[in-house]
Amino acid sequence: MIDLTVFVVLVVLGYVAGSLFEKRHFRSLEKREAAQLSQPIVTLEDVSYPEDQIESARLVSGSAVISVDYFKRLLASLRNIFGGKVKSYESLLDRARREALLRMKESAPDAMAIVNVRIETASIGRRANKKGVGCVEAMAYGTALTFRK
Image (tube, rainbow, N blue to C red; front, side, top):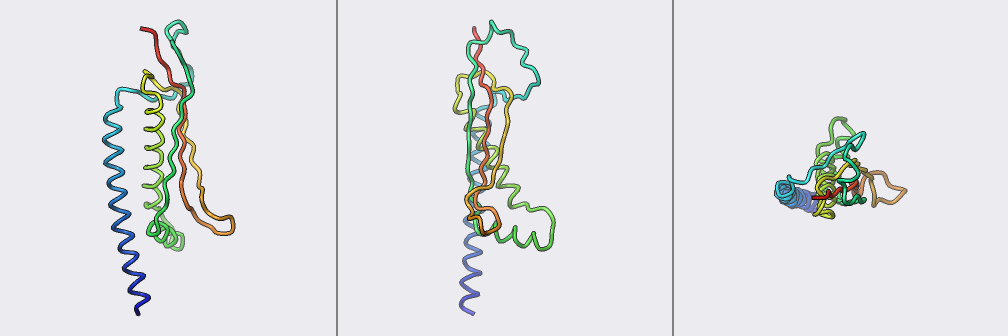
C-alpha cells in the first residue's frame, strides 16, 4: 500500500510541476514572439528581391531540445494502448518548434526577413533497446536577409 501511495504522490507531483513549467514556458514564448513580430519569417518558392538591394544573405539556425517528463511519458503509453491523439506530445512538439524559431530569429537580430525557413524534428535521448521518446529536438533554419537603405 505504501508503494502505491508513493507512486501516486510522485505522479501527482510530476503532473503539477510539469504543468507549471510548461505554462511558464508558453508564457515566455508568447512574450518573446510578440517582441519579434516585426521580423517576418517566410517560405518562398522564388526570392524576388533585386540583388542590388540585398546587403547580406546568411544561413541562420536555432535549435531546442525539450525533455519528456515522466507524466507525459505515462500518458503517452496509456494512449498507445487505447489509441487516439497524444496531446501531451503535441504540446511538447509545439513548444520545441516555437522555441527553435525564436532562437533562429534571435540569432539574426539585424535581419529584415528570414526566407525559406525549414523546421526539422527528431526524437533523441533514449537507449536503442527501449522504445519511446526521451527528448524532442526541433531545428529551424533559413536565410537571413538584410537590405541596403
